[in-house]
Image 1: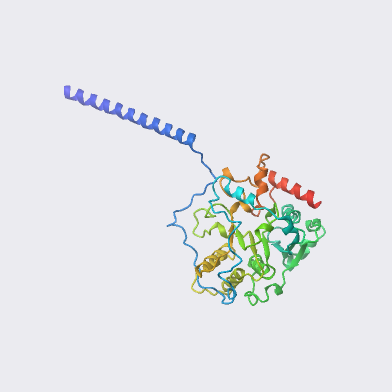
Image 2: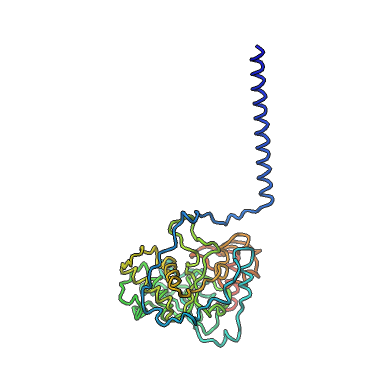
Length: 386
């Protein structure tokens, strides 16, 4: 009887001890969580990605596609040395990127006396049924912010000409002599690696972009970009814009491409060897010439990445990469980014906005403009009077 009583008492005290321990553990956990959120902030814009060992490797580069592209390239005296627009410090933290961008200012004398430069963009009924107000705002932003001697060439296919020129089209609202409509003709591809390629309609924009830059040089921008200030200070070298401040632009994807290769904005000189190599790679892809390499997922970022690592592997200085905030200032952590152009936030930082060069709005052709979009459009309308 005494043994049974002792056993029961022991079990009771063990149960009580377990309950007390669990209570302390629960209390400590709750206290730890409260302390953590008190001391640390969580940015829900941050990305979650697979470990490097599980993600796709750097894209295969292979040998140069064309022998003549870099035949005249001066390795020691290249004009594409990366100085002046690339910070030497990380640009994800605080306002480092915006502060650096604000230091790059236009030289009024240079802007008024430099030779003319071509800007290029593309519109198609495959994008929207008609030219939208947001797309018109992109064209207007060029006229309002860039030196008068620069020209904008709007490239369209012959099949879209009637649609763009119909009486009700917003195209007729464009009142600027330096904005020209350009019909895509086979002559654009003459004397390029794409000259003898049967071009698929699915790749019109990608191939026109490369051919136009190769023939005319200048700045290509997708029609989902609003210019904010003069781009002239960035034209002393060739570059692509960075899409986000994060290394990877997609979530846990095996086809992820580094955000340095989005190509929403690109600046290259006429007959650039980089663009020549891009055209050669595009030609190989469209002809089905594998060169022992995996087929490219696209003729945009995947093609640019291949050529970038290819020229680097041949000890050729590649093009520069504009830091994310110069043209995509909403694409980083919430704490150091501007709000989306389609968000209503009347308390946005106007000084920070004035420090960047352009604002990429990611194909939201018909979305309702937010506070920053309206603010910029009103500025541009005041300057252009249309």
